[in-house]
Structures are given as C-alpha cells and as structure tokens.
Image 1 (cartoon, rainbow, N blue to C red):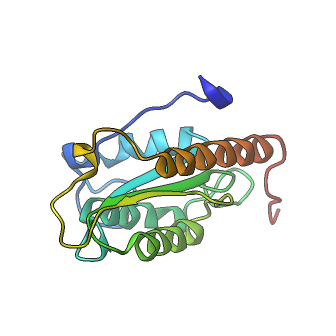
Image 2 (cartoon, rainbow, N blue to C red; image 1 turned 90 degrees about the horizontal axis):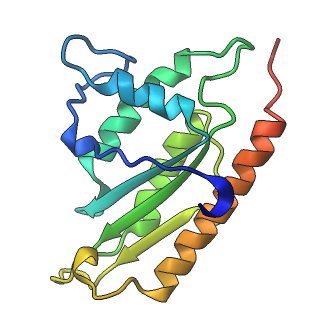
Length: 170
C-alpha cells in the first residue's frame, strides 16, 4: 500500500455511541472499542458531510466522546492522543468545507492531535443542488490531488512523530 499504511474504516453511524464525555458510558456503548482503535492508530481521518453548514452530528458525537482524552494521560503524563496525526474529509452540496474542517481541526488540536500541512480533502457540489459525491461518474482530479496530499503529509508527519515523540512534562 502507498505510504506503507494500512487502513480501517469505521462507520460511526452504524455504531451505538452514547452521548457523554467519558471513555465508557456504560452498558451497550460501543465507543470503548472505537476509542481503542483510535489510540492504537497513528493517523485519524474524520470524514463528515456538511449538514446545514455544520459537521454532521455523528462527527460531533465522536469529538464529544474524545473530550475524555483531555483528562487521560500516557505513562509520561501526555494526553493519550499526543503523537497522533489527524486529517479531515468533507463532502456536501453546499459551501462550508473550510468552516466544517476548522471546527473539527480546532477540536482535534485541543485534544492533542497534530495536524499536518494541507490535511483537508473535500468536495462540495452546487449549493442547494442535487448532485452528491457518490453520484459522480469519476472523482474529480482536484479531489484526488487533495486526498493524495493529505495522505502523503499525514503519513510523513506520523513517521516523524513515531520516531521523535513530543516531550513530556515529567
């Protein structure tokens, strides 16, 4: 695979993710297994549609649950998400990709993730239009280029952080 990375896609909409800001909200909550996968990975890509100019509720729920990272530390006193790289992918048929990504990136940065250069890939159709990304005959070249840049830069930064982690306070 290019960049030497393996991937897994988790459709959060298909999971039971209870509301809350802890790592485990109790019986039936599927977030703990998702959280473990996030923390075992080097790179997290948050994908979301644009709904009414905002990130989708499922992406917001994931950020809400990652709020627990603010109180969790590794064995050197750093947030558990330190050294992890994050990117964002946005689709929709209205403007707002930069707004949506800025909301998600600020939250991810607050949570300790590192954001590489040009780590946003998006496609937006005509505002109020009826064309959806999945209905396109082929992926537009500019989107393919954005995805390629996101992947290269995220993988590069993840390798750097794997070899030289952020310093601890201890």
